[in-house]
Length: 322
DNA sequence: TTGTGTTTTATTGCCTCC
DNA sequence: GGAGGCAATAAAACACAA
Image (cartoon, rainbow, N blue to C red; front, side):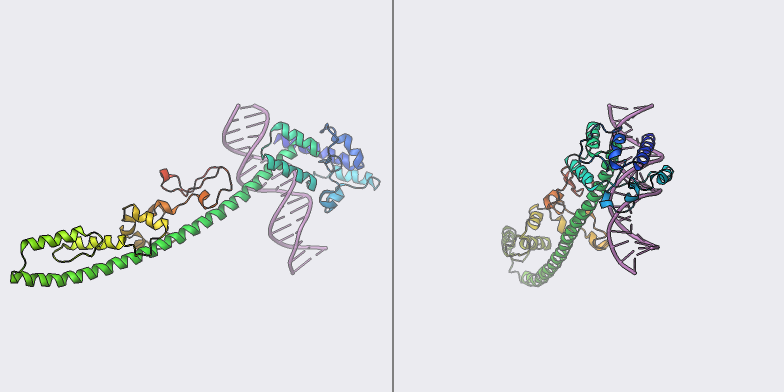
């Protein structure tokens, strides 16, 4: 990159020159880049001379040799040394962090101003912001990942509960059906007996059927009812029963209130590909199972909105905006 | 002291926008 | 076409265990 090359050359030169001189003597060189010399960060710690970066540890010390200490020899040495990276001072970084918190984008004027205040090259400030944005993004992705993982765990637990509940309901339906059929057989036997005896007359049969279909939620008197009627009555009895302890939460009652029992009685996909969890097929799951992330406390980023892609207008799965 | 992993600073190449 | 942003990467600086 052209700019980078120019900068490197310039900073190389200034570094070399500053290494030849005492810290205070480097200011005239700095002023080539910075018109202001009143910055608290300005002077020996700028791009041209990082004297005490990180408390003077590491090779920064070697970059800031004492003025009266074999200067000429080192001058030649450093003239042939490529530009080295130097870390910004704690104060500089703190200042930049504060500025980044205010606004993570740099307008040209702000960049110049910050550079002046910190005694850095504008390009250094720009690079710092760029790298800082990259770090922020990485952190944000980690956070997002954790949140999504938590969401997934919740959903999977919910899904497993529903599966278990569905199995229980199925078993109960089977049990009731069996019971009803048993009684039906007995009644059929009695009916045939009675019929052969001729003690059943038309009006009586009709009244039995009427009473059976009238009594929603009541005990169905099983006689000449059709098998389908009986089963459906049993089902409605089962679901209408206020004694049932299972539907106490909003989710389940909402499920039943829809009047759409397909969630419960739909063909059992889970039995076909029952690798639970791994085959957690979002498309098979009802809407209520997918809370918005905000609803579960995930609102870290103002513009983020992860809805897990569920039916609400068929939002795309996993897509959210920054 | 040294090897190794992590963090920070800087470069490069590509892309988008004006 | 130039400026600025980003991803990928290099390399220096740093931390730390052995």
